[in-house]
Structures are given as structure tokens and as C-alpha cells.
Image 1 (cartoon, helix red, strand yellow):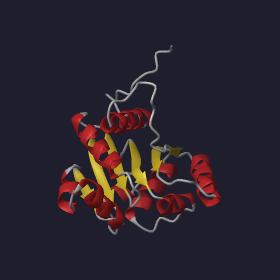
Image 2 (cartoon, rainbow, N blue to C red):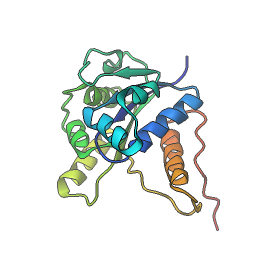
Image 3 (cartoon, rainbow, N blue to C red):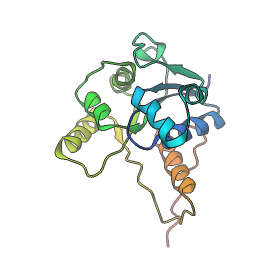
Image 4 (cartoon, rainbow, N blue to C red):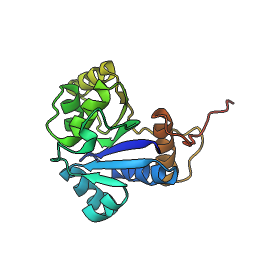
Length: 187
């Protein structure tokens, strides 16, 4: 059975991260399940000119945020990990406070309760105290707070290089077979 990855896409800027995760997971033979919030779909359209249908086509399976009865809402669904890319501060707060009020936050809750990997590509700057406290709370619960901050030591030549490196690092952090993050070799 192939590895399964749940990908959440929220309304924070940076839809390219979720889209690139879906592309890369497909290339690696990973089965993907997408949950995109209404604001996530809006951002994908605004930032990448993808409509809902095109966005959903990037995943093996797409689930509506209101479909709280979807297979991925249960701990019995064998998903290796979940990435929310990008993760809005609203979604972060909901996860930090256990508000499983839609499929996206319910899946995050399932990952935490089942002790599976949950990676949150949080997007906001500057950060206020509520953001920091929510990041601390989800970290204490077992989530990985993974702001998509670029690494420059490998001298990226384009924005695509920066995004690709971040996505590979995220996939490796999630334990996805075949991920190829750039490795620092020293000076």
C-alpha cells in the first residue's frame, strides 16, 4: 500500500507550498487527500490562477471541509502524516484549542491523538503573542511548526528553487520516502 498524506490548504498566503507538496507527493507515488478551506481555494485562485476543479485534480482524493464524516476524519484511516500548507493563524488557533469544527481541523486532531506527524507551515509576520502561544501549544501536543523560511546556503537561483527546497525539507520531516532535501556539506 502506498504512503498516504493528508494535505490541508488554508487562506494564508503561500498556496504554492500546498500545490507543490501535492505535485511532489504524486511524483513519489504517495496517495494524497486534500482538504482546502474556502479561503484556501480563493488564495490558490488569486496566487496561482487555479480554480477549485484544477486544485482538486492535483490530489488523488479531495474532501470538502464540511464533510466531517469523510474517511480521513477517523483514526482508523491509515495516513502516514498531514501537512497544512499554508497554515493560517485561524487554523493554528483552532488546532491549538482542540476545535475540530471542520474536516481540516478534525484531521489535524486525529493526527495528534494517533501520534502521527502533523506539520504546520504557518504563515504570518510579524507574530503576536497569541500566535506564539498557539505555536507552543501545538508543539507541546506533538505537531511540527514549520514556517516556510528559505535557506540561502545552497544559493537558490529562483523562487522555484526556494519553494522546492522547503517542500523537500517538509516531506523529509514527515518521513515521506524519496524526499530529497538539500544537505549542508559544511564549509
